Image (cartoon, rainbow, N blue to C red):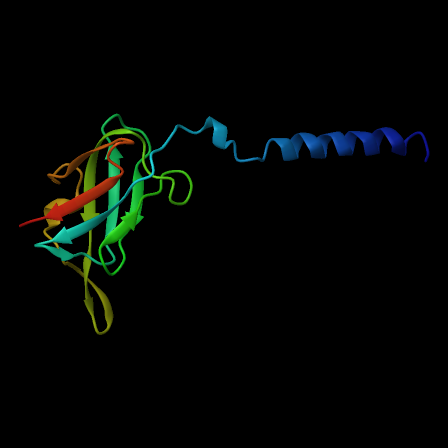
Length: 138
């Protein structure tokens, strides 16, 4: 190999190693989360296809999840199903009525639950309470 190519090849290999080492996702730098799942109901009935958001009172990254046909959900903050940050959270729930044509823009639950400033729902996420029961009323 000629003396001009060898240093360039070595530099390219080192650059590739440096760049690939920096692309690892750095999960170790993320705050700890608590695995959280739950069920959302309105007047005792499951709320299907609802979007659930937990906004930490301390202003960190919110967690979100989507309920299934039985109202069950699992939350995600950084990685799929990793849960929520520990502590107190303001909770919002959004759900829309289904029609034969698809989903309408009309809420299937009281709209007070759709905004963090008007939602009466608050939860504390901790390792000892990983299961949430969100019971919505009028």
